[in-house]
Length: 156
Image (cartoon, rainbow, N blue to C red; front, top):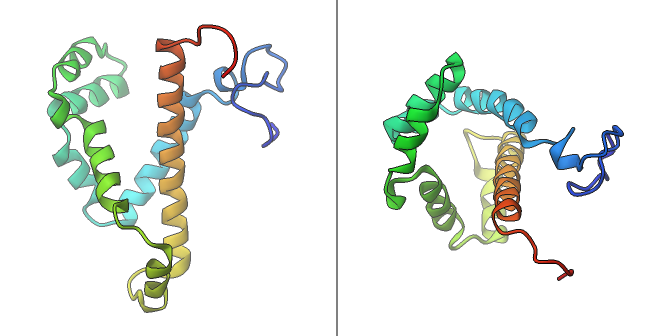
């Protein structure tokens, strides 16, 4: 697959589907990201425990059902009932606001020579990992918007 293939272009495999609905489908990326998540959790002490402790039990019930092949219907109904201020996505978005509210590249670069526990290569890998996660989130939101609010014809 060419790295130049856009998400909305025909897939190069010849299926006739859009790339995002074929070889570039999000479920394939999510599976590989889950494996990457485990590696990051192992490299960051306590991160896996913190994530598990911060999630509403309904999300954990959903993951357990999905991993065991059982129906996720009950868990999905419980997730739907979670108040917006307690939702996982709300927490992610609020964390991004907090993390980047005052971000300045030059100030961050001042720290690089003085980082004792994380070398520049480790920081680079970590930021690349987070970049992939944000890209996956943007694509998931984009797909949802396209499905939920289809264009009414004409180009913008």
